[in-house]
Image (tube, rainbow, N blue to C red; front, top):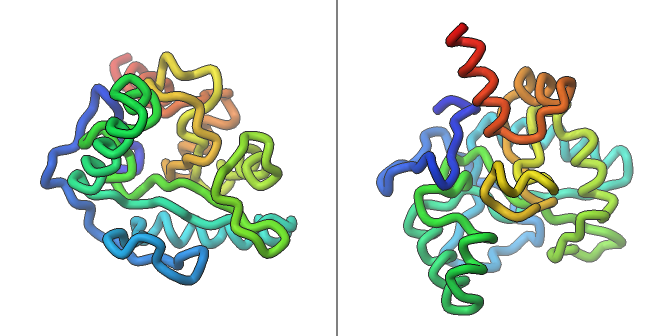
Length: 195
């Protein structure tokens, strides 16, 4: 699959889509929290994340992948659980319906951090680790997928912890040209091809 594939509420993956080349990744806590969930990413994405993780550590920030690949059926369970707990309106703003989740590509993940030996699982937008990622992730091929102020474009509320691999060329081009969302980047790329 193309690292620039656009998956959102208007561009769905099929129920039977499972990416090739997924690899199991390290658990931040060293143990599985959910026995029904195995943390996996696309092999290249995980390799690039490890490079970024090492660079962050050199700056004093410990970052880890918390939630990565989710199958269609697993996403269905996540969505249904949120609907039961918070209602459909809330779930639709904060959680992708099955088929519209980037997690199904194996290219997207949520980040958690460790500070002073303690895992920080409830991320805040001004956490130093997330600020570092916001400013530096493009160097490694990643973007903050759901930025603040772009909710009308992405269809989701701001998620300072959700990152997506798009490749180093695309992430640099987006950074250098102030393009904040994958939707805008793909649209611009498609229009250039038409000219």
